[in-house]
Length: 266
Image 1 (cartoon, rainbow, N blue to C red):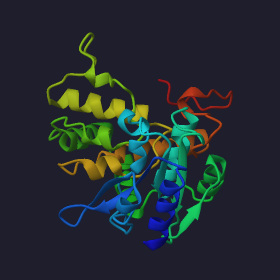
Image 2: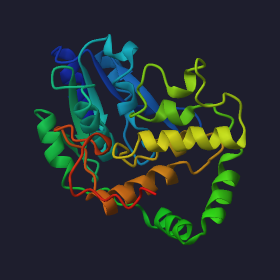
Image 3: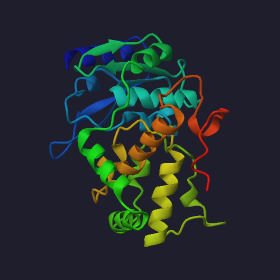
């Protein structure tokens, strides 16, 4: 993708940024993150349908932030994540430039994050047909059937936390599962502990998940943990008027409206 490489070289050579985050060829016909700090490395940049990793997960990492101002190769899910992170005061125009990639795989330049937000809001988050079918089946299950479904799906989890590492919204310096005084969630892999971990994470992502599927893609056991956050997206849409990442910082779980539904309270 010559336009992408050219843009990265311009940003590096003019010292507009210190590092450009993009994709390069990995092993096994997979792609991986590339951190461009000089023009020669920019020639390794690629972009194709395999580039699904959410690169926004890196912009909150201290070892990346310490390099200086960044630029990031951003598909729609990455752009959504950037806007959500900006609303949570994790990035701003002073430390990040967004190199947008449209659904047609074309480069788009943004002057600031407000332009990114305006662009992103043209595209609503839509659950794909395959996952929509699964969610519909889950909705029709009885509570006990649904409980068994998640017990069966989550039991193989051995808590490698690859889902957490891949998610741009899991940027806490210390996660709940890392505490042992008190120990909120069991460290060992067991039915209840696995449920607590994945349900807690889904709850923390309510109104924040950008539906990039990075968590499920990172899972070495192919557990469909993204179904949990997709369900949260659907519930937020039906119960609280939808969700779009916004620079205003009006996050779902930290915003009260007098007309919010309360039928979930038992």
